[in-house]
Image 1 (tube, rainbow, N blue to C red):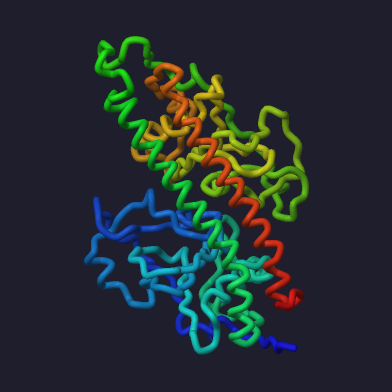
Image 2 (cartoon, rainbow, N blue to C red):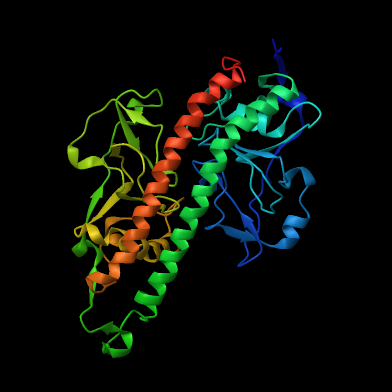
Length: 391
């Protein structure tokens, strides 16, 4: 029988730190600057939409604040409890809302620590240690004092190998999703921005609009449903009631948030619907979770022609991100109906939407596969980490 022992995180890590407590200087190019919003549902960093800081700023950082292979990054403010395992060295900058743990290889297999921090048991410990109301925070002191149970390193490696098989499939799917998104963006630019669409040589263009095309308001080709003002005191993570879509759920396309409150059917979002966040960073994604209620400060956009959905997801990216950069609020930017009502889109002939729709359907299939893989991994995870399953 393999013996499991208790250790504090401070005992199995050579260092536990956080990011710089001062806002870093921004740059047009340089080193990516990530926030919690860049931490995905597949426990990776999405570097596709980040700000940048100067190389000199990164060079002066303490080494314990520079992520390297086998480190674990962990969100500790607000949406706390998201671990990311570094499979390779990567230069980026983060602030104090993300902690960085450097496992001691003599005592623990780094990826085993990552899986430990991924369990609901560990999240419960973090939740119990969190302080504050509006922005709950897990302090570094609390993190260092958290205890975990670990077996010997041979057993740790066996557990890692089992769970990594799921994560490798998820990562491969994620790469395919990224390629599909990039291909759709390039095709959209070529056909609908540069107007080098099939047959453009024989098509007359008048005032920037090819003959047979139209400039149309977004609200004339899609129905926009805004979220419902639910009572936040009825939100829970115990799966009581109906799933809900909050701003923080949009990047991943799935949710662990629920409400026991009921609302009209118009606020129910289905798998494959396009959802947009309307505060801070205006996230855009297609939903890959189960039927869920749409919460205030989020919206759903449904093209009236369902065959335009793939094209529409790509077409709205630039205009919405334009507002993200230009709309200024008291503390964070707010996307409003008045902004969405002004968005104009150049629409073409029906055959031009076909490749976008095919890519959308492939992307959605991969997103759904990843959701199922995550669920399967999360079912086996606690049984492996408790020693219930023998390998």
